[in-house]
Image 1 (cartoon, rainbow, N blue to C red):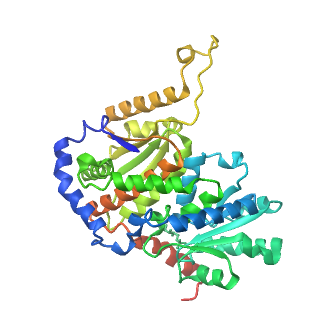
Image 2 (cartoon, helix red, strand yellow; image 1 turned 180 degrees about the vertical axis):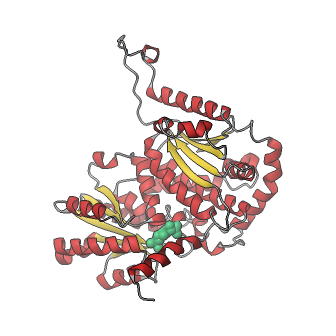
Image 3 (cartoon, rainbow, N blue to C red; image 1 turned 120 degrees about the vertical axis):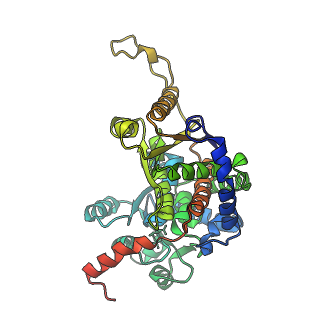
Length: 428
Ligand code: PA5
């Protein structure tokens, strides 16, 4: 479940404003679900939880096989072929997953940049490990992961010889691209990224699910959460739909000149989820001179760095706070009676203190003119990850159509590539 709280928003947005935007939200909902809008050939993610039973079995089996083969899984991919898996892994297993992975491989992500030190460090780490690769690229030709794969492919072939083949898994387009061609030529085990699912909407496909299955995550629970979200948000009425309440609120605030949305969270294991969310909204909405700029902060940490700006800087901000209501563990501040001035906290649980900090910060930021949307997520588990992924994907599709842009293309991403290829002398 995700619960939308408007107690720190209602002084900025009236129910009348929500009612006034309802027709636009209804139109966006119909455009998305009837697949009549721009980019409608990339709306396969709407159905992803449906009909995946057979495929889920195979993903779970191959995930188990990977877990049995290696102690170190290298996932190669970038953007939508990277962020979902990493966000989900840290959301569910925590940001220190690798330190506690027992019986499942540690998971490292590469191919996200072109930094030589990063790749060489990881190669060195892999030398005395038992390694598998999971290579993810829909186009099959994106420079960062393609370069990383060439380097790691050579490493694997030197380390394992012909047996490297059974340790390399690919996820790519069914027919097109050089990764599909290599997969066929070398006989790698492979999964398909559906043609009608774009990268940033692919976390509930093999792109997200295979690395998670290898890390021992219950992928059926993820899909169960996504299915529940799909059912919960089928009604276009904002009154009955917290997902659309979120989409409506952010559009109302944007039209008022609040052009930056900051996702704030009080659990560092949500940091990569916020990165996934930033790509989802940034790449879907930021086009044609429009769009809310998505930023993120980890509180209370960043209250000691960015808190000043949020409280008191340029007033073009609103915050969306992702609040986990039930942590897996808790700990009380010890009774001590020492001289550290903390006796007022003795015996209080850290979760209570963290939640109080969240409420206090929202109150202060609202006082500073920053509207706060609070989205409460029950737990950081597989079910809630699936639920949250579907919630934000749906909110993004409806938001972008309400804004009047195609949520499913990314024409601007090509510009840096053209310049880079020209400078690197890529043949035309
Ligand atoms: O969301 C997107 O479409 C992009 O972020 C892509 O996922 C990213 O550029 C990687 O592309 P590919 O999967 O083709 O390597």
